[in-house]
Length: 465
Image 1 (tube, rainbow, N blue to C red):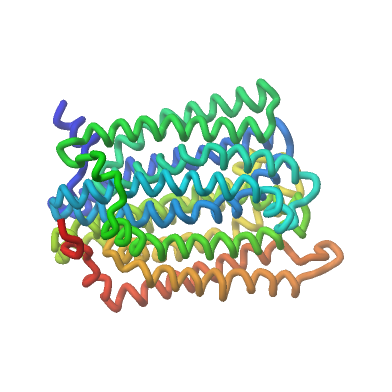
Image 2 (cartoon, rainbow, N blue to C red; image 1 turned 90 degrees about the vertical axis):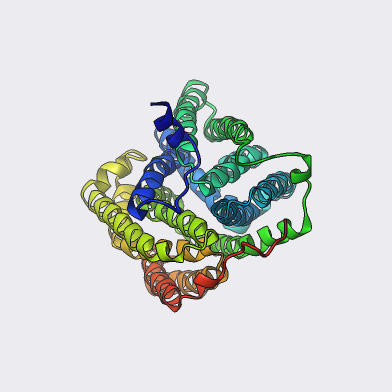
């Protein structure tokens, strides 16, 4: 019994054993964990939508692109750290592994401080820039300021859970996340419904819950002395490790920056259509977050699997692992698409009871439904390249699909569908453009994967001990 618990709570070596067994053992806790993490923001939306109203739900939705834009550094550091940890763990290089982890923790601390210092003063100018409706402006500002003030908790949660995933441990972060998700729900209802704090209460509940989960995960990682040695010298940034981390993570950071900037432009278009459309899009994208879970989860899973096996020079296991991961991801996506098509109306009723919002939402969910299959291929092949250390192609593909395709297409379709009912364009434009960009992105990622250049991108041996 003790050995079984240790295997669940400890690091997992995916360079041995059947690939399907490794992928399943690693992915199930991760999938549940990602589901729980999605609850953080979704519960905020459900609680404020039900207890405060559509304007509060719209206020939270308006802040998403800005938050994502300000978290670019987190994305870069987390991606680089995940790749380095997986490959050095696979190579059994304890010193390089410890230096990678220590440098990552220092960089995430500095990034959190930078985001707070820059983000809070820019909150209202950014909300003005994206044409935030007057009805929701002040609530959106309050929510965003509180989230940014407590951003360090989310930063440490994401970096440490990413490090543990790189070590093959997806179970312990899951347990902590489930516990803090329950805490988040309790605090949400207490602050919003009990104290009448509105969107500020939802934001406060989120940062408190994330902060607690971050502290517990840091304590867990510090106790893994047989694998990682965190000492003062590992926390002092070393040029070679910091540069390698940024080299690997910067493409993902740039991708996130471009994607978020494009989202700011799309959010501006959405805001121009009125707060009911913003409310609808907020609810739809919350449901979309759950529909995307298998795709993002198996993208993380295959990245860790490929990283460890590339680091251990086990290329022979990679192809089999990729096929098995695709089977798992496709099966999960098909089931979720069917659930969305059947229960979409019921899901929307969780957020709002406004008939106009629900009618719009059902249509938008149907537009997106089959795009999740395309996203399955896109995330798996992007994960393969990311795990191998070949991060530049994903950046360029994201630039093409987001900047050259999705954003201009949304504006073009909106311009072509203006009417008396929709003077600034039909809201369908927002989702047809997204669907088309997903399909093109899947095709481009698959094409680059087939070229096979990712097989030669291992970082092991590039940095001396």
